[in-house]
Every structure is written in C-alpha cells, then in structure tokens.
Image 1 (cartoon, rainbow, N blue to C red):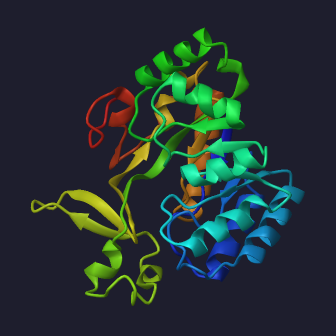
Image 2 (tube, helix red, strand yellow):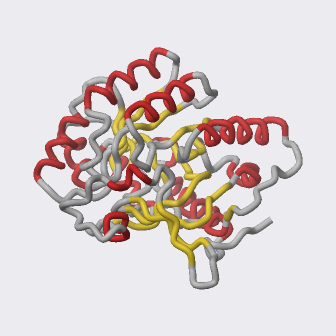
Length: 291
C-alpha cells in the first residue's frame, strides 16, 4: 500500500503551512494532497504559493495532487476551480461534481475525493469513463461495503482501471453547510467572519452535555469529535485498498504516518490508539471503537 497526506482541512497561516510541507517533503509519504478544500475566504496561501510548494514536493519525489473545494457558492469560486484544473502540471482531486465536469470537458484524468457521494459500482463506472483514475471512498462507509462494491466493479470489468484510497486517520469530514458555524460561534456573520477560523488551528470542539467530544467545527465544515484511526485495521485492507490517507493536524500526523507504515510492514502487535474511533470501517456506529 501507498501512504498519502490529505489536504490540510484547517486554516493555518502561510508560514505554518509551508513549514508543514517542508516536513512532508522529508517524510515517507508517497502522495501529498494540497490546496484549499473548505472555504474560499481562506487566502493566506494563494494559487501561486500552492504551485510553488507543489513543485518543491514533486522535486523530492512525491506525487502531488491539488484538491478542489467541496462546496461551491459563487461564480468566483468556479473561476478558482477552473484555474486549479488548468494548472498544467498536477493531478486534481475533485470534491464537487462541477469540478468533475470541467475535468471531463478537458479530457483530463482526475481523482474523485471523499466529499463526492459515490456509493455503488455503477457510479464508479460512469466516473471511470469520464477520466477517474483514483477514488477516495466516502468516510462513513465500511470495509464490507467496499468489498461488495469492488466485486461489483469487477463484474463490470472496471476494477483494474482505478485506484482505491481510504481516509484512515484524522477527524472525519462529515458535512458541509452554506453557513459558517465557526463564525456563528463567535457571534459573527459569515460575510463578516474575519476568517476567525484561523484562531482554531485544530478546529473548535463541541461537546455533548455530558462532556463527550461530539463534533469539531471548521468553518463551513463539520468534523467528527474524535479522531478516526485505522492503523490496526490495515491487514483488512489488503487486496482492497491501494492508498491509505492521513489527514494533517500538525507534525504528529507525519509521525503517525511513519507508524502506519511500520505497523503494516513489520506486522507488530496492535498500536495503542487511545481516544480514537474506527466504527465506520467495521459497519457500526462511527463514534465507537472496535478491537
């Protein structure tokens, strides 16, 4: 299996973002995703900044993928997606159907991100004919569901025409809304948010009334309250999953990527995973952990 660092979902200052990718360039990650995939108001990194970082990572032997936004609300955002797609150098991860259509029109290969609701082999068949090279499974689906879907894809004769990637570490992106919950939590309107999400480099945690972590607010994105971690489930991915994705939250994410690789290669005993969940992979409630 290959290992990927997903796009940074949080809003970090430009210097912190660049420092993270310097660490990523020295890591064992095979693939690095980058770009703003949550909110177009986050402009600490401009298009040319992303391209410069992408070129540096590519020079270090990483496959670089530019990720599109998952929720488009304005013509200016469509223009930004078009600019991303027309970069001329790097693959694009489409997290919205409009991005898929632009890529199809240009006859460019692409990756279908986890924000696109793809739940069966027939949908994969359509996307594969449009240019899909890799599919990132929606985060709420299970190993059994993936196995059945890939068997259906085999029956359609398309299983070997695309790679399969699974989100395996980090707070799960569960939902997107036109409303900005981080701004609302500070009694700000979305139009006058002052990009306050930059004050929460790991999102803003929301607990239940009994104190259990329930969600993490990240601008217009709602994440799971607990981190998802499939480090001890890699054996069950064999013959199904080509790429394991870790979602960045800082330097520790890169360290955990190395632990993922060691756990897979050395077959060591279960890695300790306190305060994490893996329920979706096991077809149980996502908030639970299965040994």
